[in-house]
Length: 251
Image 1: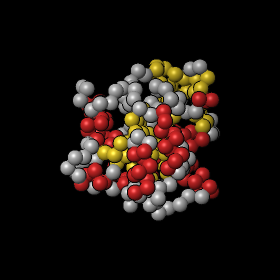
Image 2 (image 1 turned 180 degrees about the horizontal axis):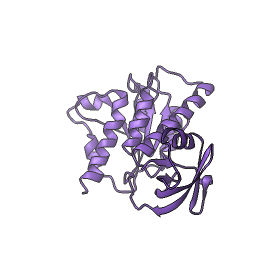
Image 3 (image 1 turned 120 degrees about the vertical axis):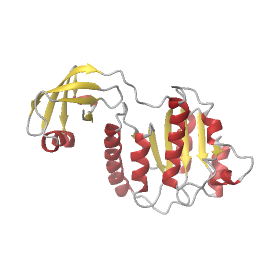
Image 4 (image 1 turned 90 degrees about the horizontal axis):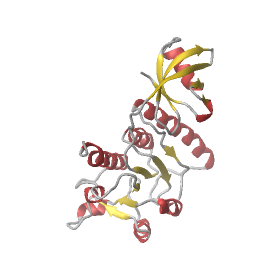
């Protein structure tokens, strides 16, 4: 069944109204009919199997048949703070990071970020990023829509990190030392419900000043395996490792 995230204001008890691009997808692309069944999700709740009861030119109304108990969220809340990368690499981080269970994303302007965002460019990018996250959430049957926050400077997301239990940054120099801090050693100590922030540098990595600042604010440098990963790969490695340790090994 197709899954759609529907804004909270479009829910009325057991009735949900789908509008906009989703309604167009249902009416024009999927060619759905009255009595067809879909899965509808409020932005931060478990989904419900719904039956279509009415179709108009630009909206679809459905009734809840059954609320689903399945929870597909990671047992920890993971925020990826991603140094702004070149090209469409951020699209990949958001799409695959959502599929792998990230709860939030913070783009940040790192010292070595080649791209620079102005206010006009940022709003357009955030609109596109929200669409990427929504579609990836529906495809992967997430219960919650991950949040994408406005771009921040290093000091801003350090302030944001004060509510997190674990703060990490992937540091390529850790991969070159004999006495490295492995990501696995940190993940193995995580508890369900922990809030984890993982900071990933842009293509050129972190500057010396950024490394010093992160360490001063209790961010732990970690190695993501013995190989040097591309910026768009690092977050995905981290999320997959967390899933394996906390979800697959638990089974």
